Image 1: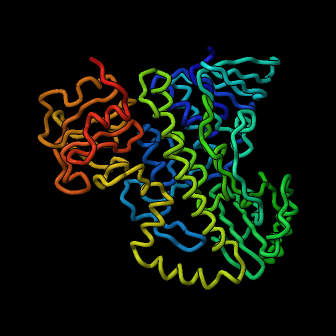
Image 2 (image 1 turned 30 degrees about the horizontal axis):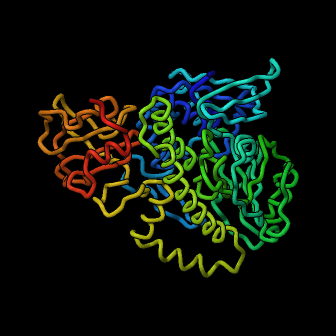
Image 3 (image 1 turned 120 degrees about the vertical axis):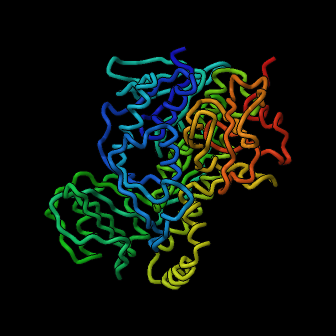
Length: 484
């Protein structure tokens, strides 16, 4: 075979997944239709949980001094995102081309084979592999891998060729969007005017991000190619300002079309990111949602490739990630109504603005949007079960460390906080997949009442001492059978 896993799509999601797979020992090839990255900055926001995942992968220092914004929004209403329980609380402004470049460098450094200018044309699933046909500069190409993952966006070729079933919702609203040089308009954030919504944000390089929505355009959305003249005319109708002399860097539109595959897996083929789910990019959740898909799938598929993965591990990707997409799409629909609805939504906006003044309401919405509130299959166990391992400083035998540093491994983590030392191996038979670390229990914070816990390679707690689940059961569920 050409690889153990072939990933189609060299955007941020595909590159994150490929790097994680390779870090965990899988042989990975990435196929990308484009010969070069676009260099466009469409998605420009990384949330707190995404930054934690980047920190786990030692990538934060590679970002070029991203700006932290402690105030976000929900449907255009100000939302405090800076008070969340994370060292990266807030929204971080990082252009998509930079995110993609950082992830690409990591993937290549780890040994991922990235092949550009290759377009997928056929997918045939066999009992023990997936056969692919593609076209490139050298003509027709044939490839085989044990597994295939489509990270190729909303118009996914993998999704179509592999026959995934998709639930779709049609278009009723759209926003025109562009990066424009040579214009001078005041910055505004979600300014609702009688004719529509206007957004303008000038960057340090003099380029202004423009977005405009006309309330009257709800029933006649335009799909396909969008020219700058259309955007400039819409901007004038909404704001009364002429930007027609500007120089567009790029122009596009996004709408409220929504899609979600009925299953993230079909045999040996998986989908992640926009290939699996798509919604209006309000609140900056689309890219982050896809990156979190990659973090969830990478270690599971790598375990499948290496052999010895427990039954159902690969299927748990769909079990865990699809419900998150459903919740996100509901969140986006609510924001879309508040942000792009006409005068009829003003009463609802006023009520929500009053509710957002309450810390619990604000923290709930901010935590959900950031991914920090995510909890996988908690059952009735400890409050940490199913949640991410909380950030904390720890004292260990050789000095000090952090929970993030302990998570920088392709293995799971057994963290013993009971005595500060491990006299015997607490996870005999699983040392090939789980490493044990003893640390002094913190005096305060979410770990202050915990004797021990088991953490998956993606950083989520899957067992807590004293709970209903036996340690051996959790080990077998997530890490397979023990070795003699």
